[in-house]
Amino acid sequence: MPSLVIRAGRLVCPATGLDGAGAVTVAGDRIVGVHLDGTDAPPPGQRELDFPHGILSPGLIDLHAHPGLGDSKHDVDPDRWLLARGTTTAMSQGDAGAANWPDYRDTVINAARLRIKLAMHLALPGESAPHPSYSKLDDLDVDACVRAVRDGGDHIWGIAVTANVVVTGSLDPREILARGIAAAEAVDRPIIYGTHSHPDWPLDEQLECLRPGDVVTYCYLTGPDCIVSDGRIRDCVREARARGVLFDIGHGMNSFGYEVAEAALADGFPPDTISTDIQRRHMGANPVHDLPLVMSKLRAAGMPEAEIWPRVTERPARILGMADEIGSLAPESCADLAVLEWAPSPEPLVDCKGVSRPGGRWHARLVVRAGDVVATSEA
Image 1 (cartoon, one colour):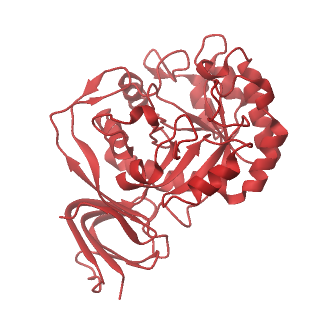
Image 2 (cartoon, one colour):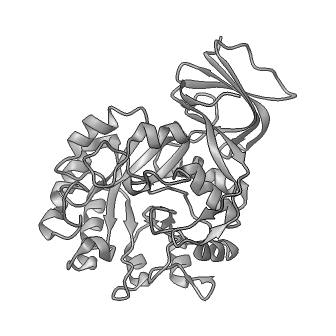
């Protein structure tokens, strides 16, 4: 007998092409069956949940977040602010570096129910230092970063590098990126990169440094590194994507603008992944900042719903190298699941510049992590 049977008005799984009403059965921490209405009925389960108006998908994957328990200047409680709101896997964008990553592993990665991967911060103290995190050259120790990534094994996805003028101080951003690339090449890992956002180093020169598999985050920001010029995607951006460079939303506090998103989508340039960059400054926001909200903003900007689901499930799973384990409803995949429902709302959806679009948003009704129900609002 399955330990859990979940019925929903719609099952969505881009990895398998599944889209239709039905049920998913779970035994232990594995998906054991998918049953579409009109084909076969699921067996009885020890616990059965029914969401006739819900969309049941693989657990959402947030490629740029800040899960933690207070040691990073940006972090938020991973199980409260990510897992309970539909995200079952998240990547920490640099919350720990070589000097403090073992503590992060023990107190955050191993303690949270949320699955967490780390993009190792290039700087030794990660985001725990009181000064801007990339502003001290002695902190940018390539050898120490390489040793930490090797020590971290599967906990570590790659390396976090940000050349944004806000965090670099007086350091040359070219040297910061060069050191990040050097560390990444030594361990054969990608980087997730935040661009410089200042006219003294053009975007085309930055993109030329990146390699296939590297991820540019904050891709729909406004300002000097905007990927759109005169309403069209810049040639250097298209060339980077053609070389295999990936582009992530990283909404955050300042990095999502409808003007850019709408122009990029209209010009055939959707993001590769949708992520929150959730951080402490989002605490107390109304509506609550989470991945379903960012997905809703992309929908408001004109992104077709069918293009949104892959960018929070199968695509980030592949980027993390975990497509055989997460991001899919295929039998034998880990039973990480989310049920979302759409809620019409008179409240508008607002970007980082205060520009709004008509409201309505997804919100999580059920979250299952490795077969265990961790949050639910049952019908």
